[in-house]
Image 1 (cartoon, rainbow, N blue to C red):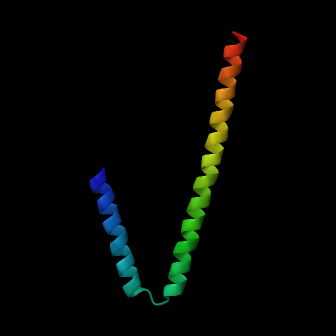
Image 2: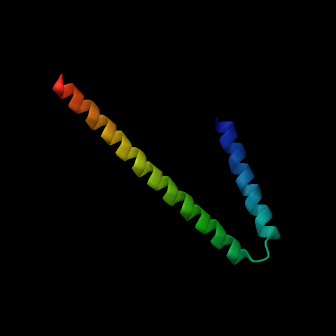
Length: 69
């Protein structure tokens, strides 16, 4: 697994190096990366909140059924 992480890191660095040399409007490129990163982070956070709520509801249902028996 660590080999794949290292390969991924190298691919990201190579992509950044290529983009820096080939992109004509660097500020727009950085803005695009920033917007994409923020969007992915917000979506991940919302999915995490949804999962946490689901887990809490499931745990409460189990506790209630144990108390009744």
